[in-house]
Length: 494
Image 1 (cartoon, rainbow, N blue to C red):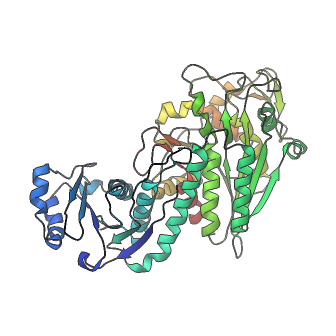
Image 2 (spheres, rainbow, N blue to C red; image 1 turned 45 degrees about the horizontal axis):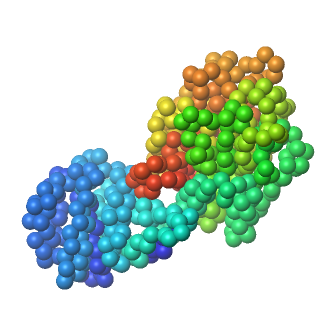
Image 3 (cartoon, one colour; image 1 turned 45 degrees about the vertical axis):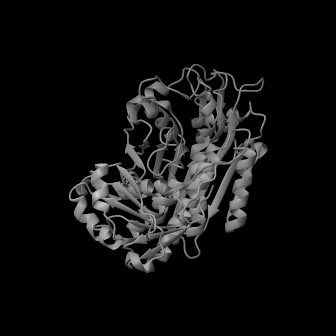
C-alpha cells in the first residue's frame, strides 16, 4: 500500500501550524533542556509527566502522551541516545520510529522535530521523508479484510525551509521505487512470475517513455544463453529476459548497467531444498530483480543528467520436472564457456552469467549486479548487511558511499583469486559451485568469468537484508526493498 501523505517543510512556530500531533526526538544528555521550549509552547507539565514515566532518552525509547483539549493533542517522544552517535541513519530511524508511533493515534497533521544540526538540509530532508514514508508502508493485498489504520495525511518537517520542495519530490520518487520492489518481492510465486515481471517492465516503459527489449525463449536461444535456459527449461512459465533503458534528455557522459537476479521461485531443482531450507520463502529469490525494477521506477522519474541506465533481469523459476536440468549436465553460456552443473540449486549464477555477457556487450562504463545469491553471505554478514565484491577499488568506494547516503549497509568482501581452484571441473571449463568454505566468494569469482575484464563491475549479495522477519528501522516485516536506494544514489552521483 503506497502511503498518501503530503510532506511540508516549515520553520514556523508550533502555534502557527495546524498540527494535532507533535513528534520529538530527544538526546539522552540534557533531554529536559531540549524539551523545555516545546513544553512552554504546549503549556503543559510535560516534564513532570515524563519524569513519572522515567523517560531517559535512550535509543529506541518511546513515550506517547495524550493532551486532550489542547493543540496539538498528541505528543510523541523518542529517545535518540548520545548526540555523538547521531548520524544520518540514526536520523532516518528516529523519524521511522515516530511515524510508526503516530499510526492509529487519530492524528491527521503531524509535526516532526528532530535534531538537524550538522546535517545538510537536503540530507536531512531525505532521511526524514524516507524514514516516515517507508516506515508506514504496509502490504495488505492478500488479506480478505485489510486492517484499517488511521495515518497522518500531512507531515510537517520542522526546521527545514520550504524551498526544499524539489528535494521532497526526489525522495518521494525514491520511496515509490522501494515500495514497488517490496510489492514485487513480497508477492507469492503464483502471482509474480516471469510473465508478470514482463508486464511490470512494460508498464514502467509506457508510464515513463522508456525503451524495453524482451527476449523470449527463442530469442535467448539465438543469443546462445545456454546457462540461463538450462535453469528455465524445467519451468512451466516461459522465461523472459528483460532490458529497460532510461535515457537522459541531453548528452550521455556515463552508461551504467544494473542487473538483478530474477528467480521468481527457487525449488532448488533436482538438488531440492529440504530440511529447514526455507523453500516456502523462495519467492524472495527475485529480490535483485525487484531492486533493479524499483530503482528503474525511481530513476525514470529522476532522470539523472547525462546518465544512461540499462536495467536487466533474466527472469524464470527453478523447478523440478521431467524437463528440468540434470545435476552433472554441461551447458554452454553465451560467451562460449562450458559449465558443469554440479548443483542445480546454484541456479542464480547461471542466469546472471548470460545477463553479464549481454551487459558487457553494451560496453558500459560500469556494471552492478544484485542477487540473493548465497546462504554463505548470510552466515558471514547476517541479515542486515549485504556483501560487496568488486575487483575495481573506485567502483567499490562509489557503492559504499552511495550505501552510506542511502542508509543501507554493505560490506566489501575479498575476491581471493586462489579460490578459483575450487571451481575447476574435470569435464568442462568450470563447475557452477566450489567447496562449501568461502561459498559466497567462489560465487562472485564464478560471475567474474562472464564480465569483460575492461569494464568496472561489482556484485552485491543481498540474500540477508532482502527480507526482515520482524521489521527493522524503516523496514516493515517482510520484503525490505533493499538495494533500491543505494542504486539510485549511485546512479545520481555518477
